[in-house]
Amino acid sequence: MIQREHQRLAIAKKYTGKWGTVIGRGAGVLVIVAGILLAASLCTATPHADNQVPSIFEPHSTPAESIYHLSHFVLAITGLIFLVVFSLLAYAVVKFRNSASDDKREPAQVYGSTQIELAWTVIPILIVVVLFLATARVIHAIQDAPKPATAVEVTAIGHQFWWEFRYPALGVVTANELHIPVSDPAHPTPTFLKLLSADTDHSFWVPQLAGKTDLIPNHVNEMWMDPHQTGIFLGQCAQYCGTQHAKMLLRVSVESVEDFEAWVSSQKQPANQDEGEIAGKRVFETTACVNCHAVAGTNATGHFGPALTHLMSRRTIAAGAAENTRENLRLWIQNPDAIKPGSLMPAMKLRDADLDALVRYLETLQ
Image (tube, rainbow, N blue to C red; front, top):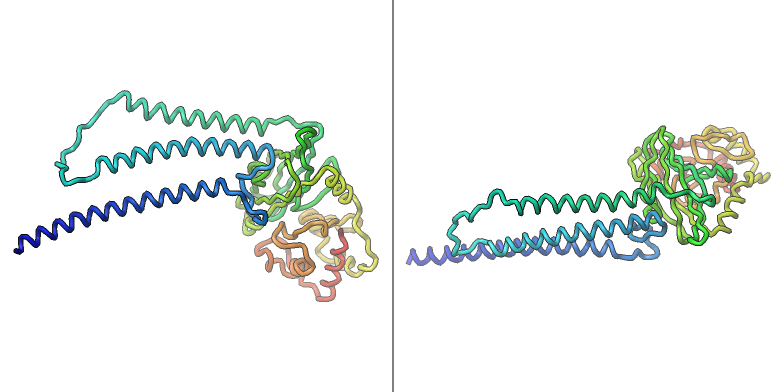
């Protein structure tokens, strides 16, 4: 009786162990399949119109499209490798799983198989060579692209923690929001950027328009983009550059040729001289503001901070950290850490009357 009970328990334990193994393996397979489906859905999903997260899988410029097609090629090859390896692994797990009839003997060992060694040596080398050549071709096409005479030239300078944009041929200096014309394939108007850094390493990245390129002190890098449609394209400093790296944002405004020319014309205009805000102008010119910022037509000629001649033509302040509203502008002047902790903008600590006058003056800088 006791012996029979032991046999029953042994059999139950045996099958319980088998089912536990099966369930565990099945759960592992389901997790892997779910991960593959999630990755595929993220790669093929079309961002919602209100989605503020730029997608590398929705390119709108020739360099971005080249990177997009290359990424699909690489994903196809690596996906095929995964399927082959996973299929062989699944076959081995199922075919040679533990069974009651297993005699526990070690299977025949194969040593020195020239065919197997050639296979696992030559095939990976060929895969690496193909991926290398495909990547090199795209890099060459982007980096060595000729610059047409119609190209717009911009010098982008990375600061902690904002962007300065200079248009040497147009005589325009602005900050944080880059304006460029749309490029019609029939009449290409690409934008070529010279990338510089004023302090530490930064990285210029607008995923839908081009790949990321670093800005390195005492070294000039270059990149270009030719947007195919108008709109606002968001980007980011992609190189950790200090406390507020995460809020060193980019906004690229792609406009029709006519709108871009109108924007250039407005940026060339001197600062608005509103005599009704003379008190605010006096506050601006008699405080530390003039040491960091420049306003054409005033004694403010600083270069440590963004030029403010046409401050209110920008939709954001603090390198995209806040909307350009009266309330945010007031808070930014009085207590910058409330918007961007760790920024290099000093707290002005003005009296309320002076602060209100200064904000009203800055609001006239259209």
